[in-house]
Length: 379
Image (cartoon, rainbow, N blue to C red; front, side, top):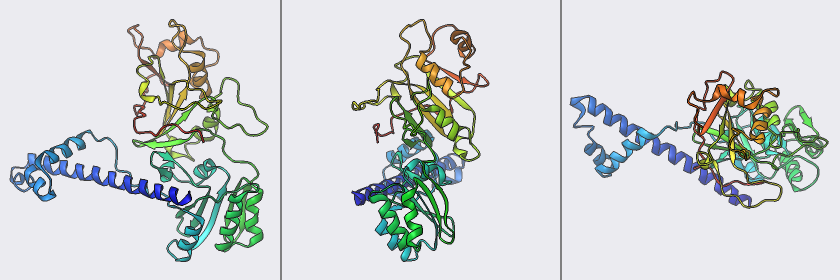
């Protein structure tokens, strides 16, 4: 199973590189065509027919490349993906000298802890459109990272045992390596041993991160957030949005990818929001209500499921208002209709959606679009 996942990740990496190369080719062809149109002396050497002949394609293909370049709004992403190997592959890779001297390791029971404690942009862990971090990261003297599959922290099981064996192979003493079994998050230094450890997971925000079109998406539904032992979900916050606010959105200095104003889009028209929906299989405890609220901050969008109001005279349902309140975008003492008036167009006809922000004028920077996202999963 691990080798299959390795192959899938490698294929996705090659696919992303190929798509980036194709986009850059289209841009280069379009730039040459524009130069030829603006400079008479270059028309012969850089004409579309000349470009077609040099590239071994037909004239219509060149025209299509130029048209694609004009429509392409996705930047070529130069962020290197963090390679992820099996424990055996990682051992061989390190021993070959290709990775350099291992100076540290971070191991967790959850992918979220690795993702948020890595210091890297989530897109460095992109696996197709999903963001999938391993449970172990190795670090070398240059600060480069190497992910390892099926090596976990925690209490018993094969995952922690795999971690102990690998850490010993890489130079840690057995007793130090075995500490991985006593914590849900642990960080090792090759010289100092254990430098940080926690008996519980560090982060509890639920939902699987996805990366597409240059931005991050998390689709949140009722029943999906995991609640830490001894705690109960906040009243009026069944999606666990407060955790996203407290752990991520409130810390742009730690997570630069959420730097920017917070804006909410609330859909009033079901048809307008159809592009966000996905046919999902029935799953006990997970309600298939529509994504009718989108919260955006920086590069991150949180798609929040909430039912529409049953009364047409009402603009927003209680669930939609609860979502806004959970992210500090709806005052608890406000009367809904009077408060919403400031965000409505002057014409009193019902809009398809309303954008809500602190200044009353900001809008979403990216149109929510689920066309490139995979079907929802419930891991």
